[in-house]
Image (cartoon, rainbow, N blue to C red; front, side, top):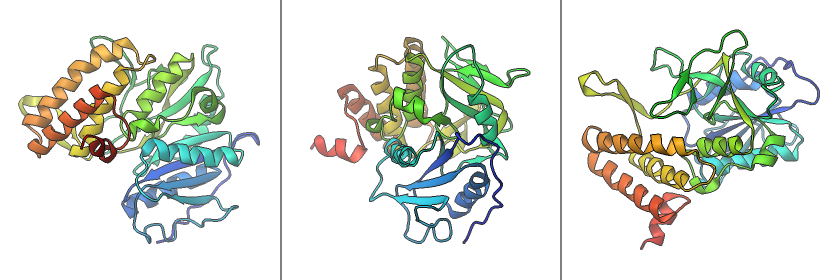
Length: 321
């Protein structure tokens, strides 16, 4: 299956070169095709960092050559989301790109999204240095756009619109859809590979804020993206919950405890997150199948988080034997 989107030149200065970095892990081919079709016309290069796929998954999607616009960086195994992003970032830095656009394999940028984000990045936002800008995102399983968030206690401030300029300062951006300058990355540092997968974007956002940078949400452009494997309706009209596999629950529980230890993690977020973690543990223990596996992996994550263990689950498991 070959993707041949109509490639139009981006509206950017000669100094601005954007490299999109998409991380894949046994992707759905049709979904990946949508990513290519939507993204390729908007960027100067598209790099797929593959953590696991069959040998023929990418047939027709790329040509691995120095001067081609699409490149596959296939990894020997699952090196994790953070390490995969760092791999793509290193590729972009070596080739003189100014910005990177981070994407998950199921992301689909709206038309013109990259140019809109670049314009926001070039804006003067209260005189602060900008670490990253990101679009509002929409999950097709929901009837509204997800808000940008300012962390508060006991509840967050959720921002759906910003008025005429379309820009809001927020306390974190999800990694998929984030446009980041390589200059900011050089100062703030790379993604934390020891977290492996979950809360990687949250940790980097907190680190950026601690260094005095701003994170900007752009309400005037959209990225379509799926959060969670599926949705489950809760009883008593309590809404829906995002369902994760047991192994993801391990990282979700472990990594939040690891974030509690970091000096740049806001205290208000920790105070708010502890009850949220308790509620998640109860829901996935009592209401969401497979309950026994959920409990086992969540307890393992909490144990390893308390012990400060990092990296992929299999390595930490072997250390305990």
